[in-house]
Image (cartoon, rainbow, N blue to C red; front, side):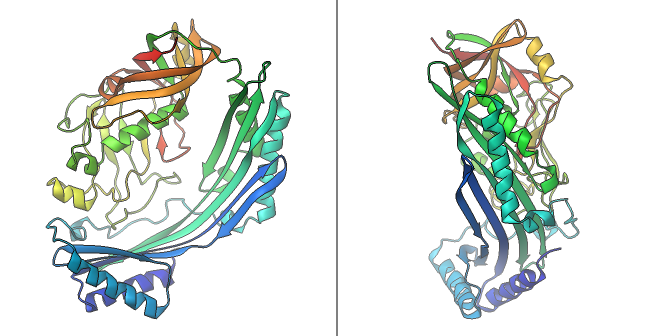
Length: 443
């Protein structure tokens, strides 16, 4: 159920903007309540709760656009905001491609029930949330004597309502909730060298979160497996990307498939639509309509209807993702991606991660990347990394202080096996996969 009061206000402000001289107007209103707490060594280090309520007004007059923001909802303040927005258009050069979406692209009938809302997230008392964080930390600290410290355990929750109205007659909204737990553990090896790692769980629904004991144990296990890390020699080997690093790689790719990057000439995929870029097993999708997932939404940030977009199909690069403005700049149609990607994922394969690892004679199981060493314009890729060395199909010892590098085109083409372990821990998700021909720089 949407916030009807906010929706009525949004429609009224659209009408007011037109009365003040705007040719087109759009209003977005978000109301939310957030809570977060961090516990360290059993004590509450931080707790915060707030209820932001904000409005964004976008107006166009003679193809000149202006956007203003406010959290002051007093009638006089809103009237001044509208007047200021219309006045600001006089200082802007006209842009023929600016403006609201084409009417036929707007979502006329949409399902706001995408399983995004759980009232329990907002109703859960603070003391329960704090105790969940305590349980998570206690599990990690008591898991193994080598876990000597923590960076804390946290619990966060967020409930929100979003409404949008524009001068083309669109008026709609939806609500959602999210909650998360995170734990970061610290371990000492026999020489006193410290290692840290963590684990987390995030869901729209409270009862779908991993249990505190599971999060604490995984955080401890991930930290302990870093102890005794070695360096390896420089070589070219297969790299098995775990779920987390695979998702991070996909997030890098997401920057290269947006219409804005194409318009600015800042993507290695320019002029590559319809070409075989990735390996035949690679299908990458952006789908905002899958119920209950982190990036799901019934319409985009402009009111354009949501739809599934297959960006790569069996290795062939199909399309960029556009909002209205960049679609017009490139003589295309919007793909419903105002606000960016939604649920952006690599479709899973049939192999388990263990089966993929078993097929590697010597290589790297990649568990972490460091820094920012990718260039989506040229396709160059280089990152600091750590993981576990693979010998004869088995995980052996941890490795660190290495660098992995390659070219994004060749990296996509080098994905030879894809796992069946796709999980939507966040809106960008990928299963474990094997990438051949990666350069590892070490000793």
